[in-house]
Image (cartoon, rainbow, N blue to C red):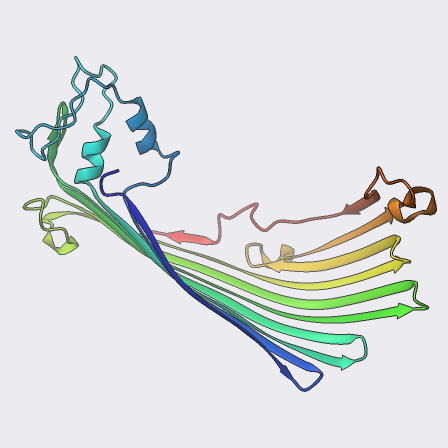
Length: 309
């Protein structure tokens, strides 16, 4: 496909360390850069137009502005575009640069009692550039150059602290108790400009336009604070029960309705480990499960977390 390409560059580093017998630390850092032009999505509108194009429509016309022919009434009654010419003439470039990282510290406080603190974040910077020159492709004529450019950034972080207690009693009773805190935040910002009326098709920068400038901007963000408690019990690794409760507070709701409590319970019975099924080779695994709980979402009403202009 003309002017269509994709390239990705990435680097990643992982490390884990032990400090004495009771402390473990680690980190992960990843850098990536993506660059693409044109289209490489097989389900895109451009690809569909190309597949549906009439084979009687000429692709090239050296005498036309831009050098490409296009749909005429006698060739293509529905007026489909010359996809090859559109891709070749349109300067469409995209890029994003991403930095991701997280770190953790895990400490054995007492036998069976462990505390894990972790923090992670991500930052993405992206650029979208599209330049549409003047051209004539059959009956499709563009008489005014248009340039669209958008720059955006997205940052997020999450901090968690989880306390876990595990204990086995009499070799048949397994108990796990978990309590944790979590804090998340995300913020997205972008600004874009659309300009028209250029002196020619070669000056492809915002400052070269004569007039008709539209500037758009957008900012949106949210924060989430959570508390979590969970108790798990297993008898002979055959009968299992779990009870969980979490309390979440979202910045997307007003102060009077910011927090919600979401409990849940579940249980399972590993039938395959019962004596009446252990010798049945035709069954490799059979588990009976049941659960009940409440869930919530902060994405239901987003009218108040978006500011644009």
